[in-house]
Structures are given as structure tokens and as C-alpha cells.
Amino acid sequence: MAATTPKLSVTPGQIYRHTKWYQDSDGTWKSKYLLVLAKTRSGDIIFRLLTSQQNARPTAPACFHGDPYPGFYLGVLGGPLIKQSWLELCRRQDFDDLDFCTFIGSGVICLITTLAAPLLCNALECAAAADDTTNEQTRRMLDQRALLGCC
Image (cartoon, rainbow, N blue to C red; front, side):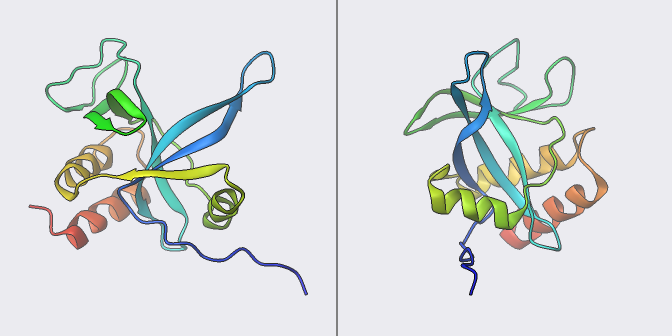
């Protein structure tokens, strides 16, 4: 009988560190932080990456859809996220939920923290309105806002 990966509770608002997001030119694995925003109808994970690279990103307004770096300002989140952080609003393909859970089980992806509901509500609204967000992602993010009781 084949081993199966147990379903884990991955929920919107959780921030994870993916320890093997990409390899640099010398082959060293580099990590990235990602925020779970919502789930697709099939359970795949809608997410966006976090960055601490200011690159002229504004802190006010928190939601910025302009060039060259659309993003949502999250502030300093604490824990290992000791610098100002922004949610990058460029398109990302949804993360397969089984792959995500497999990576959690193997330690490649680790839960770091969870955003407070008011901040998540604002991030969802901003990401849902981004140019690079698909129609399905927009619907799911707005549904998630409604589930949270966002005003």
C-alpha cells in the first residue's frame, strides 16, 4: 500500500517560509516567505510572496497598484520577519495543496506566523484588485474576506 501525505490545516493568513524556493548561481538554496490568501475550489493554495526589498515601495497607502512594484505594506511582522515587509502582487500560479502538504511534512515549508484578521482583510482586498490576479483568485479572495467578516 502506498504512503499518503496527511492533509494539514493550511489556512488563509498563515505565513510560511519555503526553504528551497530557488537556487542561486552557486547552487545554494534560497528561501522565500509566502502568505496564504485563500484556497481554490479544488483546495489548491492561492498565495503571494513577501519581500523586504524596499525598492521605492510605499508604506502609505498600504495598498499600491502602481509601477514598478505593486504591493501591500504589511509592516514589521516580528519573529524572523524583522524588516518592513510587503506582499508582492505579481501573479503566482496556485500551489498544489498536496505538494504544499508534502513540503510541510518534509520540513521544506515551515509555518512562521499568522496575520491578524484586520491586516489579512486589507491584504485580501488589495491582492484581489491587483492587475495580475486571475478572476478565480479574485472571487476566492473576496469570498475569504466575507468568511472573515471583513467590513
